[in-house]
Length: 508
Ligand SMILES: Cc1cc2nc3c(=O)[nH]c(=O)nc-3n(C[C@H](O)[C@H](O)[C@H](O)COP(=O)(O)O)c2cc1C
Image (tube, rainbow, N blue to C red; front, top):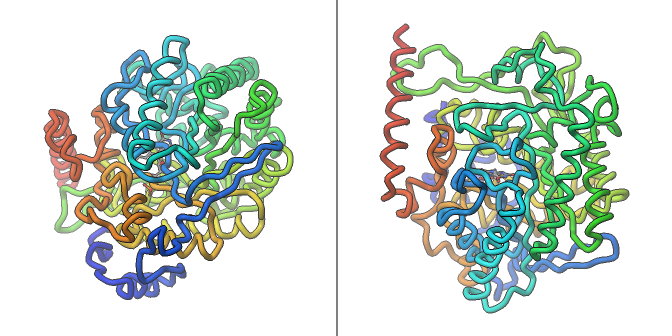
């Protein structure tokens, strides 16, 4: 239960924060102060990428993660909200912009009817979006030297909602016993499983979108393999017959063919992969009413996976005990990316926001479809950071962006500097923090301080609760643009309705 854990905002000094990590048995390097570029911050060091005979030097060690807003037009074109977000990415001061946001390579793979997606009509609007970001960066920082921008290519697979915000229209790699049950897929429905031929056509569409990205001037594309979407799902398709399942070669065939196709068509385009390095079973709120807080979700507990043992279908977790990590296969995959596929860099994340959000984006306050954190969210952050550290040691030479730093809040820069200096990770990505405090990297680099401390993300999760209720995403608690928007009332209503439902449930 979240009120069982001290809030990071109450840990007023680096010592207090370190002491809390110590109580939890967590080890993390951390600096006492924020170091500016002028004073030699590790975050201001360039990061050089080498792939297939090409080199790019990224100007610093800050990265902006892809962050979608459920706010494009139904035709997949950016709106003023989308454009504002990309402008903020440019103003952030980060030199690596990982994908902007998820861009579906075909209509049926959109995660919602307001996601960007490829059609010939959407090419020019994508050019404008990229230009907005780059122009904002140049205006704020004088040049685009060292700025590297990618586009994240995706198919949402099990989590596709291309036509109706409330209606899943899944296309899956295989039937998963727990996820089918959770997301109401009939285990006997063969039509939802993509055929090999459909997959081959989909691979062609990834290449079409990559060509578009290259022509528009994006430096790289991300072949998204995280968060439970289709690419990620292939990695655990152990029982899928045919070319796209089975052993590791079969399960990575989708990824390998896409990358080989992109390399053949766009030899000068860098390729990155955002990967869920490990997964865990889905979790749900413990339904037992919580004494004294009947309007709240219960703490997360794992769905019953006993029926799947000893062969739980997960990637990066032990198949006979999926609550524990097993990085052997992810490491083989990362070696393959480095040695055979010419992948320039990876962005390592974990789990899925739909079925185990405390693994993917540790938060103090759960989103409306989540649960109270079953562990201090700091544990979730350090789980990812330690796993990335292990990868850095076992797959040297592959540049890595790390995820799950937002929950460190005021101590984020202090941790980021130290882990980069110590070689635990090459670049630190910002997700939710960039929605509330977009120019945190610039403040660190230029001033060595958080000049807008009131904008620090406290992980209220409204940026996730809003889209879960059909409302555009954004930082409602801290960004006036959203706080004063008409959608704020819709969000309040949705949260009030949830509280009422939970109260009723707790009385049953
Ligand atoms: C509103 C919202 C939108 C997101 N959109 C994407 C996305 O388009 N692609 C992606 O790979 N991850 C997406 N994520 C996940 C983030 O990139 C990031 O992995 C996550 O928030 C954890 O990082 P953080 O702790 O810095 O927030 C999204 C997260 C949020 C909260």
